[in-house]
Image (cartoon, rainbow, N blue to C red; front, side, top):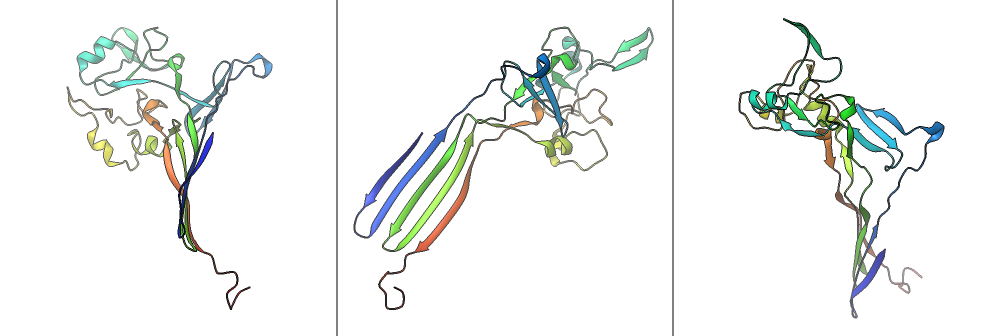
Amino acid sequence: ISFNAKLLSIKDWQWQIGASAGHYKNKIEELPDNKQFIDNEIYGATIRTQVGQAANVFYGYKTLGVFATTEEAKAAGKPGTDGLYFLGENGVDRNYFQAGDVHFADINGDGMITEDDRTIIGDPTPDVYGNIYTTIAWKRLKLDVRFNYSLGNDVYNYMRSQLEGGSRFMNQTTALKHRWQAEGQETDIPKITFQDPMGNSRFSDRWIEDGSYLRLKTATLSYELPVNSEYIQ
């Protein structure tokens, strides 16, 4: 849908504005070889195309914050991801999330955090997209400005996942100054643990952000020369 309006039209002044807005959605009805979904790994992110859903959505873990206290972590009582076990006094034991770890949502309700708890955490398709423009003219001088915009699209911030993951020996942003460090501390950034044994930095909605934007696309200032001037005909 689009519209165009002339707001001013007198001898020396002309002014008009216009805008457009578009929306689309898609849904996967069928995949080859009777597959129910296809996953692609890109920069640590899982991009899923699944029957009954939109194409190319972000697929990962949903987070519920960071455990501020040991009591909170024990109340949740969630073991870590598949394969995270250690030898305890009574043999093999599960490694449980503790204070300072990310509280991941147990989507399937089996009492553990595994790959089966992954879900759709974002959609890169915008809800609305389009353009906005305005043209102002004074005598032979004209200014033309055009914007484009996108609303409701999600983006994966790969750089932030690397610079705020806190799991390797590499420079991090100053956001890590607010990481969990003491019992009872309220924060949305988990503690730093070398090699990240509990997978706090795994692909989750921590790294999904609102990608909406309004961008200046072009700005053109022009002057129309007289057609019948003594220099130009």
